[in-house]
Image (cartoon, rainbow, N blue to C red; front, side, top):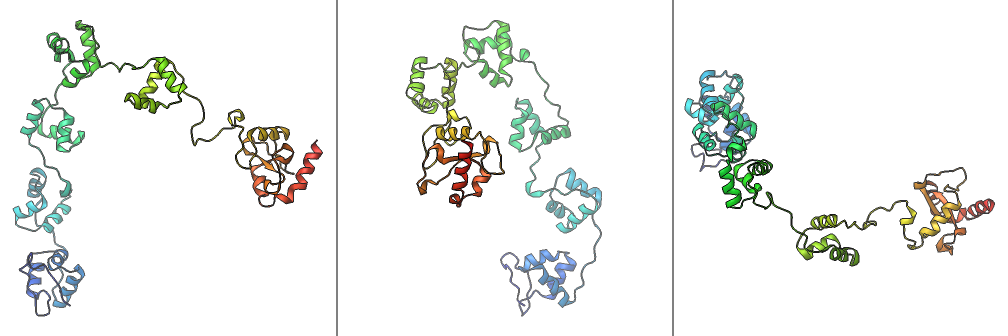
Length: 370
């Protein structure tokens, strides 16, 4: 059996004439340096089972399960308090990562996911960020922390949360006069700048009497056309709200708000592709293909009393009823009411492809009722 290895990375591997790792090298890696079988296999470039079989061939006994050689106190100090990684703890203690992982498991210390561990900010940095006036959301977004994690970090460092400052203390009458009257900022822009609600700023402006005859918040856009012009486009030319909006560079919802402001009702009618209801007056009288028209269908349904005429079936559910051609159109049948009969959907499906067998029966049923 020949094993291959990346000699550039592991150039200290000793091979025998057959291309296998030597017994001395394997015993040193496994017994002295305490590398695991999987790690040795990664070094050699083979499957762990191959190293397992090679240990048997060389007569190297398997290691017994060892007890942790690292005390809990220094392990907690390095891994938990100082926040070192497993690799850094192994280098500090002069051992390998496997022993560190085993000691963590035996001492009941939870192992972190090193791949996704974020760098812990210092207390000085957090104090500097808080003093600069940044919000918790902005600090957490920069660190990649959630609100709960960031709150725990502040508690661990003993940093008190920033106390709430009322808007009235934050914005004095002189400052609000400078911002709102002199600079011309609206309540929305002032609230965004100071991180508060624009409603509170508006009430404070009214309380101070600083309203310079202009809106406190941004007013909606004025309607650029009159009611008659909008009715002409929507009702007269049958344009959609989106088409009207494209002419004035606004959205269709904005045109809808214009219509609501002018009291223009939306057009009624079924949308394209929607299901038709059973309101017969809303169905067009046009005939589609070889089917009965809506008027003819309604006349046949009323003549038959809105009931299936198949013997031993008296279904009267309006949504299940259909109108059947007694003599199929392909055989010369017409669309007059005498050639139609009311059947429920189940009976109509039952006689499919056997319509000619029921012609005499259906005609006899209609003649007896007349």
